[in-house]
Image 1 (cartoon, rainbow, N blue to C red):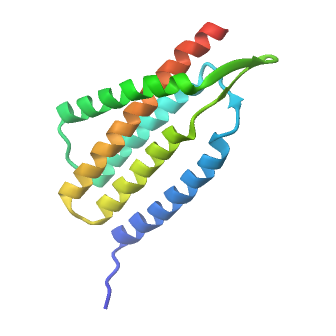
Image 2 (cartoon, rainbow, N blue to C red):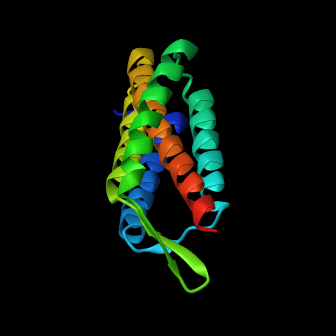
Image 3 (cartoon, one colour):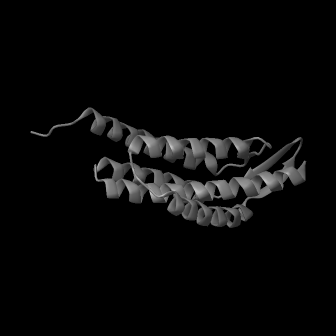
Length: 154
């Protein structure tokens, strides 16, 4: 008989919900949307919050030095990828159409991290966390770039 623990059930439900939300976000992310001065700041805050919460909940271990290298490499890539986002003024608003590849990378790394954590193996969870840290760096780099460019348009 298969024994399903509460932890396994929560991880599985979380994985399915995350997958559905990432798919939904992929459809909405492609459309041009208003880019306020605060939107990159909120994105950075919630990305770091998610990373921190997931790091604590998963119990995965990752050296801070490795995390700093991964987040820095991701940040450099994010800075470059954000150059593909065209910002333009439309009336009183600044609009931007971002690349869905950034969201796809971040969302897939979150799903892979959750899958690896679901295995229960500490090494697998730590490897998955490395991908999430890297892709959080991409988000940080992208949002820093958008924030600076958005300030110039005002």
